[in-house]
Image (cartoon, rainbow, N blue to C red; front, side):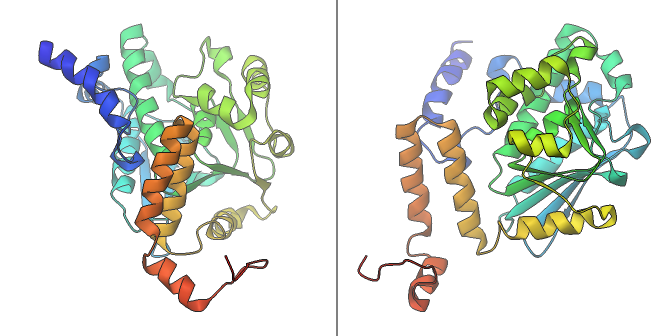
Length: 307
């Protein structure tokens, strides 16, 4: 017991002394009473759908929430599969970007109600909450530039999933809606905390308290979405890939390093973020991309050759 408490006390201190990719990626551990295998075993009783991952040679991956018969709602097995796909992406060292989408031109309607009803007791609900918060936090912390491609409806947990990406693109006619209060709930997958950081506390409270349907125009106006895609729905994924490619041009180590320093700036106190930035800077300074750029000379306007 004493050893367990000692580990729980020391671990957070150590985590502040290393690079973001070495820090604990999850929010909850066994120190919090979280047993991942226990909740996954219960969730396995509610099968259906899949979470699919396609990795491209361009360094962009596409993660698809695939349960179109239920508007891509997450079944129990899909929650476990999402965690497995994030595991896989964490090991993908050549990756630069990620698109998260739903199958059949709709994004995601949150949790499958069959699973929700079956684990409606507070204890299991909290464990499911911890599993999904861990998974979506790790998704956001991936060293990949991520974008949610929102087609159709993103409701409840689906709306929360959009906030676990760096950016959001919305197709015409799509909507994001935090419907939790109509279920007698608040967001439980980390969506409220992330929403505040994206749109500010005032806008976040409005969206949560009114369960407003957020159309693409309003989403762009409050900073929830970056762009509205063209009306050709059949080409939405192509449009998202082109948009993301503009953010992932360049060598993979550089793009991944950029994402890492943004993560540290967002999540760490300033002094720690600065130290992390220095460490990440050291991994690319004098590297192949840096040396190649120096050999080719300045490419951007306004560069002072005396610098």
